[in-house]
Amino acid sequence: MEPTRVIDKVAWVLLADGRVLAARSHGKDVFYFPGGKREAGESDLDTLAREVREELTVEIDRSSAEHFGTFEAEAHGRQADVLVRMTCYTADYQGTLAPSAEIAELAWLDYGDRDRASRVVQIILDHMVAAGLVRRP
Image (cartoon, rainbow, N blue to C red; front, side, top):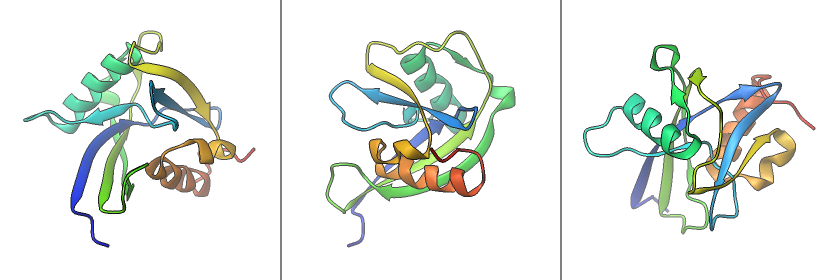
């Protein structure tokens, strides 16, 4: 079935020691990469900086941002006609990572946590393992 709707998201990929940072929002049962939907007129980096600030209370260093990849998958918990397109960036940051009120939990995921993640994050984890960026348990 062809998707009838595309959810366009921008996400932050923060890697450390063979793991990647993920967040779980209140009321959700899977982890996502920090980020979210762009607002009208926002660039990728505008969206990334705003969403990361809102979710994790840190500031992205825009000058260090690098495109990591764009990935697509069926939206979690939705019918097959909704596709998530996630444009991912790596970037340095300033501040102390702390979940905001909308975030229930932060976690550092490795490949053993794949089943705890959204479908698009699972695809990105597959890519990261193949590239040697995320460790297997």
